[in-house]
Image 1 (cartoon, rainbow, N blue to C red):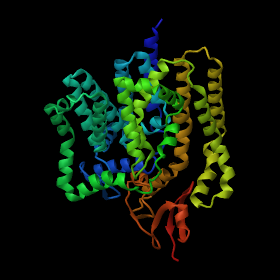
Image 2 (cartoon, one colour):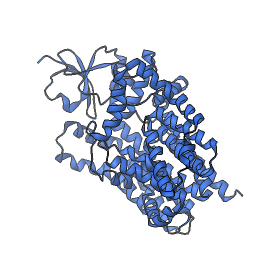
Image 3 (cartoon, rainbow, N blue to C red):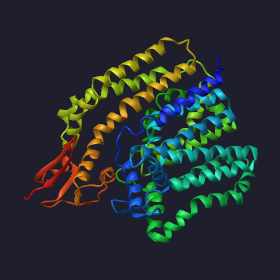
Image 4 (tube, helix red, strand yellow):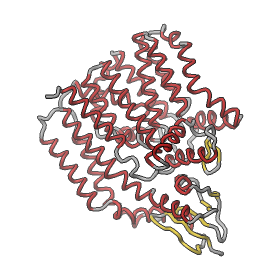
Length: 510
């Protein structure tokens, strides 16, 4: 028979691969973030310019281009599709999970590493964002590797860890910018204050490590500055980094408590276990490794709670330490709250699609009404039956309290991944994004040359159609693509496509 440790490893490998690679091409690209990255990659290839990012022929300074480069590389193997756009993030997330397992096992024990990785790969927010066509999977992998290597360097004074730290930091800096340096730098300072290990500061300034960091990240920044000049400095560093902390970008605002409900939901199905670990706060604070994890999470939480711009995925930068703390607690305590948090989430996900039609009379937004009309077609009886089977599975686990924590948490995690990967996201994509894809393919097939859009929030339309569009009010005879609520006062001569609130049509004379 296989040993318990080997069995855990085999299960964990299959679990992580299923969580981050299963069905990643089954749903259309989600706007606007996935659409922006995919279209940026497509326009790089069209223009033959892999330095600057353009969306609908407009230069953007939102993110460095590492994600776009990797996406272009996968298209050379798998073609221009959703699978290629998401694969770099998915592979980075798989490696992210490996880093959590490896360093947790090294600092704690194998069982804690198993639970920490299981919690991470199961978490609702990680399993969604970690395999999206975004920079966040790559950044979180790099940030996690950098933070773990930094701690090992502080403790062991082994230069290979500081070199690895600079490699990970360089990757993160090329994936998303200064945040990859800010978080390790500030956490490092707070940790030194906590444990008074000041001699680590000079050793951190390793010349070889710094050269490695510059070799990875500096060339693109230099080339982009040569190409765009002060527009790059103002657009990337000042606008998309400094100003994001001072003001709310594109309506992404929220109060100081914004991330509390995000955490409670995003860490499901094991939120309660992570919260239980906080009951051991005095012990955590007394141990170097555990206190390092706590400082890491607290800084991320405070930083983005006071940021002007608030996006739900910002808090994921502090999820790795939370999951390790949860794994440590799960490995050392009985009577874990495993089933009821997962059951509550599954009950909500089961009921919501079938309750939405009852709110239709209270909604006046034309687009929202069209989306709600499509819910019964996507979330059908098969979805209901499958969700009830998953809930029955959780009930079975709850009744068998003698099963080990590994089995109970493993099944709870699997119900989450099956719900998200197989049942929920493909249907949500068909409801919200398939109309954009189908309209774009119709425009491409019919060789529409000039298209007008009324907003820029559907960049995947450009990716699927291969067409550009002017963002303005359309005139008679022009073809317009937009949400149906934007066409209230615009007469239409011919409707080419109309589904779930999206419409592709030719404008008539008034």
